[in-house]
Image (cartoon, rainbow, N blue to C red; front, side):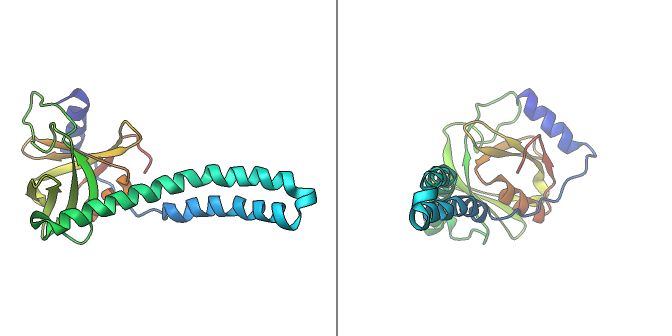
Length: 206
């Protein structure tokens, strides 16, 4: 276990109170608003007032295009996540998943000095996490599955991660830890928090 993970585990084992993670506004609505307003101004400038506001319309058209890139990327990521969840649900080992599923990436760390989890070490793979009937469910695309009783979960720390993805560092009372990489760390935090799992933040905006 790395020094950072040992520090997170010490925080979870301390008396530091956990936080209730609340849902945020739908990012698609915000991105659509930031994209739609410039495009509306661009259409007005390029059609209704083309002679006087044509240049302004072109500027706002460019702004709308730039603002639309995050929306396109977000929709593509959500479509990929939904496809992964659907594929794993259709497989035999994912038929019993809870109603709220989260696409995650696991197997991102090398074995350390402490007890290692097969969900945390290479090879990396896509998986789905859900909570149902007092268990934390993990189902991987390669057929691997795990049902962890919630009392065995020490807690989770939400943290920034490389390659533009945030992550949740999940720690078990056995000493094992599993990094769950995801682009939707707040919804994941909401699910874990509502299940009674202790959640802490590590300098992350979610």
